[in-house]
Length: 442
Ligand SMILES: Cc1cc2nc3c(=O)[nH]c(=O)nc-3n(C[C@H](O)[C@H](O)[C@H](O)COP(=O)(O)OP(=O)(O)OC[C@H]3O[C@@H](n4cnc5c(N)ncnc54)[C@H](O)[C@@H]3O)c2cc1C
Image (cartoon, protein in one colour):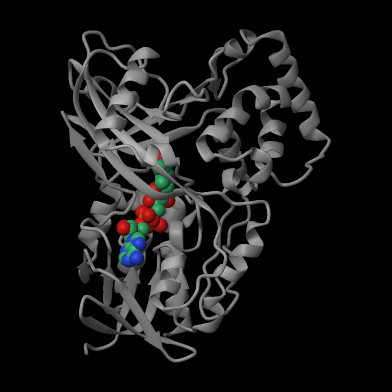
């Protein structure tokens, strides 16, 4: 048996941030990671000279928030691209761009211009309706545009209707981190005039940052700062202790004496590790990502980071083009794309070869991709998005109830607490987790 350590489960952005911050407090930390690699979703790889990312592609930093300051400091020596955030939706009838420019708005069909105008007037009268995704988006886009553009997209991407999903799926409100049943104070920060102005400018012209060596740079830099033990391929974890504390964490024949436990892996796996039944969990979807490089004689401009496809005639929902970020720094004579495909039963049953074939043929038929395939790779992302039913907050209460039982347990991050958070949100979760442990003096 080793001496007491602070154990973190999961070596993604949340786990690594927590680890770095706990070490700054002078604590001994051990990270247990199930996969062969650290980094979680924030990892990059290169194929034929094209830099691809598994998860995040764009970093939108709020300089007024601690996580924004933290990430800027972490990335201060990195060369970064700063790009304008644009995406487009192809609903089979036309291309809808966002954010829409006044010139594009003028080219909208008359019914769509009226719809936008009506939604602007409607927004002011404060009629919010149920807190669902369809109400939230249609208030902003217009009801008719919602029905013909966003509704089919949500159905294809999530396999559900927007009326069955809570608006927080989109809004991602800040999520607090708790320890030992203590309702720690909410995340500080009232909107300052500077923050309000920043928000307004961001809505008008959203910009994002991207490290030139890929988004995985974030976890690479955190890993360099962490001096403790990071155990990859850790195998099944078992937890034990008293009614009020987790005191032992075992894995692959090793037992650690735990001062605290920060769980950033899926919460259902926490209950499995405790040999307890999982309370009803929020539903998730899984995604298959297909990365393909194509030979290309001519390379069109790619101003949009993402193109979404709502129709059932393409297997993919979203296409991401690294060249929209790298532009002239991209390799010549080829182009790379990442296709996001929701894992339905049919898709799940396909081999990598079948999935690559069907994706490439849809991409060629619809004119997205240029000539023949050079290389391809499939990566499966389990639990890529939570579905947030309209009553999900009730389910979360039961799911997170273990926090009230154990005084040295923290749930944090994309799987552990703040489903659907973006990368800065994961950093914030890590900062809060470390702060809660320090304050609880465990
Ligand atoms: C498809 C996709 C696209 C995204 N795009 C963006 C974007 O453009 N911009 C942005 O800001 N954010 C984006 N995000 C969100 C961003 O990726 C996450 O917020 C962030 O990476 C979450 O970090 P995390 O550490 O909480 O979780 P993860 O990165 O998921 O890390 C969790 C870690 O726990 C490990 N683990 C799981 N189970 C166990 C177990 N039983 N035992 C031990 N370890 C385990 C996993 O292997 C993983 O390493 C995206 C996410 C997805 C899924």
